[in-house]
Image (cartoon, rainbow, N blue to C red; front, side, top):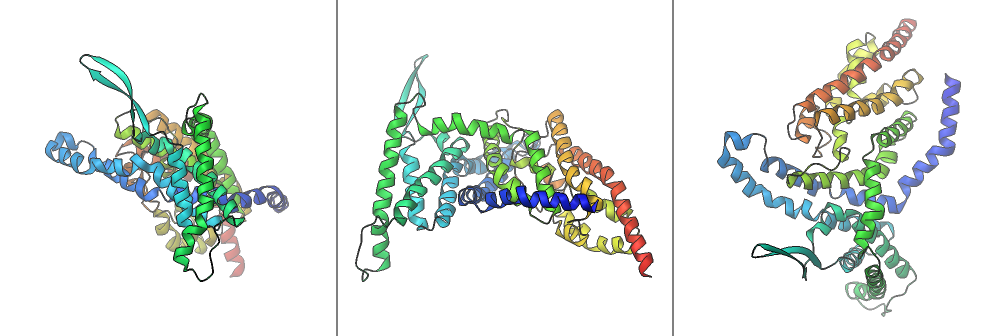
Length: 434
């Protein structure tokens, strides 16, 4: 077994670990990842407002209070989720400017100008004239649909491209030179003027070019060629299970698999899908996606299965001592005391359940979610205890409790023989040391 583990570790070190490190250290991926993470406060506020404005059964038990909640909390959605692409643009521009080592304020300003340049200031609509509806185009307005969840991918791409051009020009010192005696607060705007102006002109050309194409706008082109394929990929349970499997393998060797695999590869598209689901839910429409960032409420507590198994089945003094330090943190989704205290890292006895249990639990949760309709809509703080977390995420769908218990029980049963084997090893070691 040790020979196999050494060969596997050598393969990972040679092929997988360098790829994971490149993904984690790439400034484009880091900028997008951090930029999308910066939208979470707005998304959370929108989620709470949606829960309160459509609280389950409140309209039946107390209609006046339900109407008051809708009136008070309803407008929050338009100011948060309704312009979520703008927050993604600002966040990505900030972190990518930081990565490219340019002035963050002027990087953000450049990205906003370029995004607005490629955004059509008009909206197609219908106007009622008597009993007839006439199609018309209203000029001088920005379609809020461009600033909502559907505009996130265009915002991310424009932020990266515009700041890349701005940074390239800035690093080439293509700026207006001023004497060193000029105060920094006066000098900075002049230093940014040429790189920003050239970037703006370039994106003005991009706007004109896309007007000549069947897409009409850059946003429509990105939506067709990039957004839809990426969202379909993130909505695939097999892709998610495979990424979880790779993440667990990395975790086994002491690398943060979640941050190296799931967060940079799956999370950005999954956050966009969640925002689109929230928009659909707020409009009373069918949810377009099953797999979003909110789906992880069914997988965040998977490690609770093996932790409870160790606490219940462990008879060794080591297991009994660990029970005092691992169970309570695990309830709040803090698993490090178990992972590094057992240790689970580089422990060949639990290698098989470690890499297989969580992907299989995710697959079971997806299957049950699909047949029960208990689709998580909201992202809930990661330290929220199980059952409460899933109830809130699904807007208090009782099937969420069933799914959570079923995935926990499945993981518990899968881990049982391996926990017993591990505990027997502990008992043998304790007997030898007496």
